[in-house]
Length: 469
Length: 107
Image (cartoon, rainbow over all chains, first blue to last red; front, side):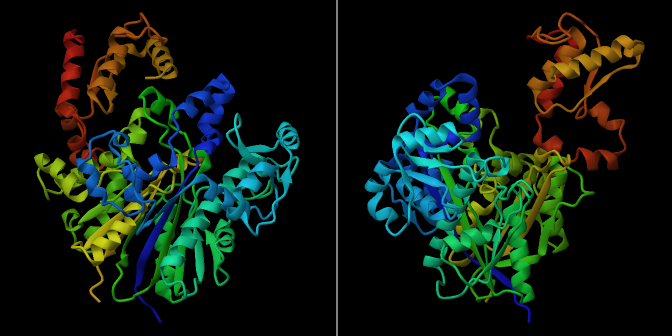
């Protein structure tokens, strides 16, 4: 039996972890090169939890505001936050550092964390029931000298340390394991949140991991299946799992595969899941400091997306209008855009103007612009508009209006696979059910060349359509 | 233009091929067009690279210029360049090249 696959819901959890910014790749490298002053500079510009919650792009991520509201909000957006904002919304939540640490503790199935005795005493209810190994401050210092990774501000108070998984295995070095545990914890936070809010009584058959972290040991550095580990931590027992790897394009590839698994009848419910990227915390902090901005890359983002059979209401993944960038396709920006946006539409007899909204890489421009990376979504939307102009759907002068009508401002934290189209999903689902939208196209691209195995980029897209019932 | 690229172009020019060389740019902005064309005609204006003080005098053209476009089969141009001419600042790029050709890059 076959069914049409739908996306019922998507949930995002942003874990605000200012004390882990120092463990990001860029802050770590700058500290190694220029000393502890780098950490002092970062510390002076870290946000409080309240500031991170009230930050307008985060309110869009958790569904309390529509992305379009950002068009009219003056930038930089951190100067225009309300004093207070809810930390929970229909599309997810922002959680604080103690909550994240509690999940990190539960995620540590290998029991490699040695907790500061004082932290455990203070954390009390948050870690109740967890069997935690503690150590004295002297023992923790000595562990760091032997290769353990501090968890928290290395110059201040942390919660403890993470021991290496193996003395001689670089794939199990403590800093690698901290990245992987952070991903596992934030992925599980998002998955738990999804299942607490959506059809909690229906079993999940399969979990598809789509994050970018490499989980494995020296014999299989990217062995994977973090999906199952995330499922275990989130308390799921019914699901199997596997990971899909495609750099930032992973989530859209995973959604196409999830839709196919449901359409085929192999599984009834598939959840696409990913945790956040510790390595990317503080990635552009030099630009933010130079611009007088706070450190805006201080959240780890987890996501869980619910794919199920047709319920007569939720928007449909139109697999006939799914596209992938093939090996032989051109790699120039306009060629990728044509393959991923225009070609699948044309095959269905549709024009670019027939799509209400395009969801592209939705990087927050306040994060990318101070570092010289420009406004990523606007660049993508301009390219789609240029394709529409080339196809004579609009004239050249109509490009800015097309961008505003069919595009979106960027609002996602720069967490690698997270910004790739999917942050719009909660808003797309609302627009395609209770709103007036008919079609939303999700488009993701991945920088495969970063891994040095090819000079190619990658991409995938699909059309999400209103369910006529 | 990075230092290695400057050095590679200098070596080719000094190998005796300079009279047969011209530059075809695909630079994305007026500013990057101006800097690259200047470097390859009058020498590295930042005096940081191997072409500092070495005016190769190479003529520069840009892929978006009408004269270049006319020299390329339309189907090839459409496939390889296509809508980029809607996206990039063609007028600014052409003006930048005119400045380099008339020797008034600072005006």
